[in-house]
Amino acid sequence: MKVACSKCNLRELCMPVGLSPDELDKIDEVVTLRRKVKRGSALFRTGDPFQALYAIRSGFFKTRIGTEDGRDQVTGFQMAGEIMGLDGIVSDHHSCDAIALEDSEVCVMPYERISELSREISALQRHVHRILSREIVREHGVMLLLGSMRAEERLAACLLNLVQRLHARGFSGSELRLRMTREEIGSYLGMKLETVSRTFSKFADDGILQVHQRHLRILDIDALQRLINQQP
Image (cartoon, rainbow, N blue to C red; front, side, top):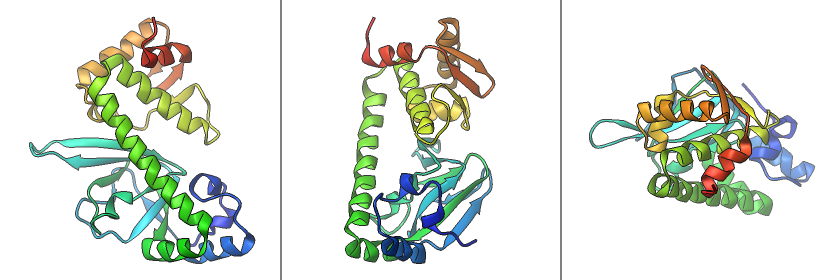
C-alpha cells in the first residue's frame, strides 16, 4: 500500500514539524510503503538484517529479547506515532523481536534513504537525533524503574506513561484499554504475574483505579503521581 506522509494525521508525531512543501515531497518519495502486521506476528525478529525504520500508523507492539535461561523479556511497548527498528542501527541486524499486540500497520522508511535525506534536510536530521536521544532516555528510565522502585511505584509509573502517551494522540487522559497482558506487564517491570495482579487489586481497593478485564479507568491520577514521587 502506498502512503503519503504529507497527508498523514500522525505526521507531527513521527516527522519533524515545519517542513516546507518541497521537503515533504522528498520524504513522501522515501516513505512509500505501508505494511500490515497481524496480531501475534513479528514485524522483525532478532538477527534479521536491518534495512528500515518503521513508523507505527495504527496498532500496538511489544519488543522482547530472549534471556539466557530461555525466557522472553519484554523491553518496551510501542504505539501509533512512534518509530521502531532503531535497535538495528548499531550492528545492521535487529537485536530484539517486535511483536504486534493487535492488528497493526506501519510505514516502512528505508534507512539508507532516510540517512541520505537527513543530510539534505537539517530538520529531519535533528528529528532522527531526537528519536535516538529519546530511546537512550527511555532505557535509562527503565533501568531506574527496575533498580530502585517498589512494585507499586513501578506499576504506577508504567500506567502514567501509557496514559500520557495515549493522551498525546488524542485519547482520554484517564482511561485506556491495555493491549498487553498482565504477564507481559510483569515481564517489562521485572515483577511476577501474582505481584502485578495483587498491585492492580490494591490500586482498585484504594480507589485509585477501576479495572474491568483490560479496560482501566484512573480515578485518582494524583495518587499515582505521589507514589512515584514517594510522597505520603
